[in-house]
Length: 443
Image (tube, rainbow, N blue to C red):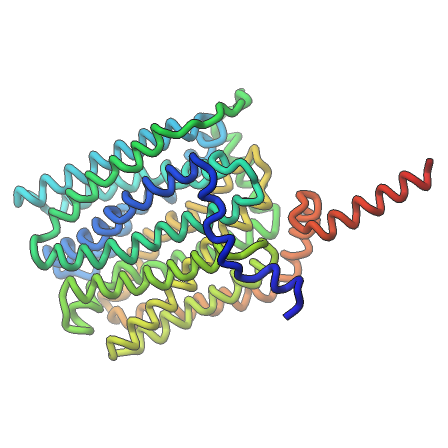
């Protein structure tokens, strides 16, 4: 391997470099605690729904209801992120999320929970997340003083999500078996205090936001035109949408695999979710250790296919240890694909449109998932969960092949931007040297 290629590869000494910034360090600690509770609630909620209903379809419906707002409202959230103070909005969304978790805990612990309660509270959480997620993504750059460390911060965000994803489901599986689902919701509600405190302790420089005298619909249209007229952004968002529609909803079917395929209970569900989280954590650490964004296009294409392959092999397996390995591989590939897409988008986007582009990213990731959950639940009800995942895996592989075919055209569009921004330093330095020589000769 050449020195140049090695410099673009994995380098673990760079993994934690974004933590040198105080604001990001506070955010990282607070979110790491809160996200353990979030994943505990996710596992407990899916198990609660399946225990109450014994319906694969209703598992999909709950997922649909909880994530539909992300499809409908994130474009509006993107406009708000570009117009208003992101820090203050995030404090509000975390407070509202805490209240949702505590209400859910109260209803379960007092044995008053019904399916319509779950639907309503899932919808409320979806409304909160539709604003929280794109604004949180766009807020990352405000915590990082050196913009060269932005890609590392994004990768570390993914690593803390998936470290929590590894820990949370494991704890949830044990607690559900011993004490029931309600304790998981209660712990999640209390865990939000950590991230609220971290946001309040931050010292964020007040950024001048130019007032917009145009209506919201104009700004939303401007964002759509910008995104879909630029091939790299359009291609990445479309591939991510496909993955979210046919691949990512595998998570809503995990209770079926845990109980009906592997003949286990909440502990097996916790193991399955934890192994997916372990793979995703490994993927996030891999990205955090990269020195450069160069080569991420190939990474996006490769991991899309690997994710599909993992789902195909998982759906075909009836051996638990092999299935755990395959779901780990799928988790690795899914996280690298999504985080690499995030990094590329954030490095090519114009600053005044960052909030809107990250809202489209959230729309492609979270917004398509409800339709995927509904589709997965419906198909699983008719053809079974294994065949449903098999079909989704094949679609992901096909999408990766299409992306690989247009990758040269994507690189041709991105390269001039990377040269202009100094992301390809050796080329930028060469251009500066040539320009300097021309100036000397002209004199």
